[in-house]
Image (cartoon, rainbow over the protein chains, first blue to last red):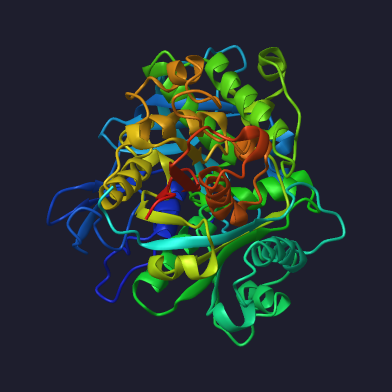
Amino acid sequence: MEEITLNRDEQGEILPTIQNFYKFCGHGRLMALKCIECEKLIIPPRIICPKCSSSRFKWIQLSGKGKLRTFSFIHIAPKQFSSQAPYIIGIVKLEEGLSLSGRIIVDKDVKIEIGMDLIVEFEDAVSAGWPQWPRYYFRLAKVMNQ
Amino acid sequence: MTEKPLAAIISAGLSKFGKLDGLSAREIFAYAAKEAFEKCPNLDPKKDVKGLYLGHMSESAEHQGHTGPMVADWIGLNPMPAVRFENACASSGVALRCGIQAIKSGFADVIMVGGVEKLTHLATSDATEYLALSADNFFEQWHGFTFPGLFALIARAHMHEYDTTGEHLAMIAVKNHHNGSLNPKAQMQKEITIEQAMTSRVVASPLKLFDCSLISDGASCVILTKPELAKRFSDNPIYIKGSGQASDTIGLYERDDLTSLNAVALAAREAYEMSGMKPKDIDVAEVHDCFTIAELIISEDVGFCKKGDGGKLVQSGDTAIGGNIPINTSGGLKSKGHPVGATGVAQAYEIFLQLTGQAGARQVNDAEIGLTLNLGGHGSTAVAHVYSNTI
């Protein structure tokens, strides 16, 4: 993948944008914001802190580990995903306490259960159409440990 | 019953819901408006109606934007101001609340509020994709999340936390299909069995086909006026006593509790407090059953039962016509149909019929107080209204 340049403001700070979140994914990093005023962790990034309305953040890297909160097997999919159906979607509670939605990609014989340990991974290529970002997804944590 | 009403509904109209071949959105709306005008002979639409607030979501379906003035033009309301509201499936619920604000503020004496959607000419996959627009694209749809999928995530969490089962969800589908079979304007006027619902194909586990509402064309409208002017236009108006609206995260994943819809609880609380009513005062309710799980959770969050008991509530029969708190006597989105932009005001239309004794075979005995709860997306918007047939 060609080098991905993060968008920065005039002072050189990395902008707290969704595009930068996905650009970090292209670097293999799952990143969140930490509000400098109230210390709230925020994912996806926002220009204004939803807790204290501050606009001062630092980016921090998350471990990418988490537990499955809920899931569904999608049998009827939109056109661009229909060749992959049935596939699994879920919401994952990350170690740091934040939650994120995403695809759960596991071998067919794996039994999916609420509470199971997952870890984030990143697609090598960017999406075919707009917005042309690399996607993240989750897979079984133990597969990663091998 | 001490609170002064916010506004009165003096008439209401509803088009047939379903696949309305040969009719475009503006024409479908005109049929709803025609009914409302004909039911209210003391109203001169061209002279009295001072504006149109229209709920409408899908400008791409007909490649037609600017739908507020378009619809106003087609029903002869020019040159009165016309505005379109878009809050996903809560578009006309929000339009209703804003119409009430226009009346209450004194900006207008009479306002028409309604909604319309034309969707059935689209391929199912295109309509499904369109309906998913109301979630968080960059973190949900773009990752392959569908709308049934998002409500499936909610259903799974509720089943995990409480004793909710697929059979409870099927009971909601069966009840609403029964009610729809009594509604001549419903899209699917036929009964189904628990077995049919339980064995229907999986759309997004644990939700099956019969857990999902329909893709529909349709339109709805009500005519609002000041409470003190209501009797000038109608002998049996109903009164809106409370209105509540709240928002929640655009992404489902950010919510701490996936088994509850916080915006619903907040909107309902606001409407109850404004009206001086409590959940036990409600005689009939129309709530947003875009999926069966939505009705189940809303019935908890508006206070008809304790949190987690939504399954037991439907099982008890209390939400059927003849029960303590009949829900979705119209057939709901499940059986009457779900022309997205029309849905919020279609709920108000049903309450208008119920509180004025015009609901025919599905009439709830002695219905005096009604509630509507209209949801946008997976609960990023919720709008609640409380109605009474006495001032």
